[in-house]
Image (cartoon, rainbow, N blue to C red; front, side):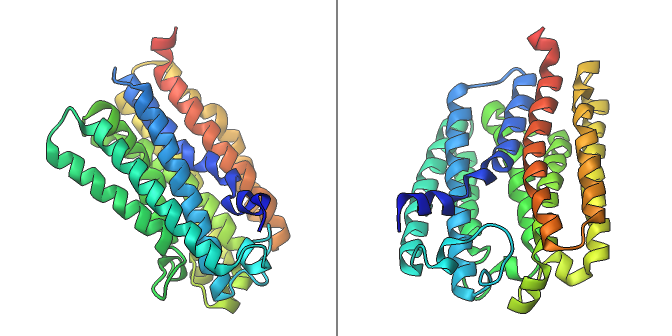
Length: 302
């Protein structure tokens, strides 16, 4: 149970995907003339803890259920015996407390200039984020085993991640932000869908229901296409209706990467073919968020 095992279980390579919504939300806020470095920094720290919490909880939940015993891809700590189930459970609770406290502080500094009830609303969202990160695979009613993981990703990696970041910076409720929020959310769903297509055989054996398990591999690939192209369309609609400069279309530079990822996913048939596609799409999502954000703000940078 070395420090290396804990770092590996934290799966820090998942952070670029988690940070994508935070960066885009802050870029959008900056384009509206509102930005504080302290809010961005605390947003990133809180998101880091949410993600580590989710990864530890997934390692524990899948490990005790036996789902990871024959999984493809990277080895998991509890299933391999590198970290005991009890030690991982304790780590889940410690990180959950740290994540909640950071989220509470972020909620305070981001809503201190608005109504008190808004702070309590964000505190509730913070509690929901911590609870959802744990309940994805932990417990008898783990929603990740019922096919609802995609909904979780859209809500937390898309809508709440982007719109929440935007609101904490601006204290403005702008429903147009749902479009770029959905764009990032659908790319994150694409990463999850790749993961689930890779693990289909293992998930069926373990009784874990995911979208690919529910609809089959062929339909899951069509669903993947819908997510990737839906992401581009959502961002294009926001840029068309809410921006006035050509620089805002800069996100199109990333579209070839997304199209290539879609083509590779359509050709993949085995777990070994799906696994190498995960990292490029996750990194591509972060690149997409950064380039889209810079493009939307390009007029103020020049």
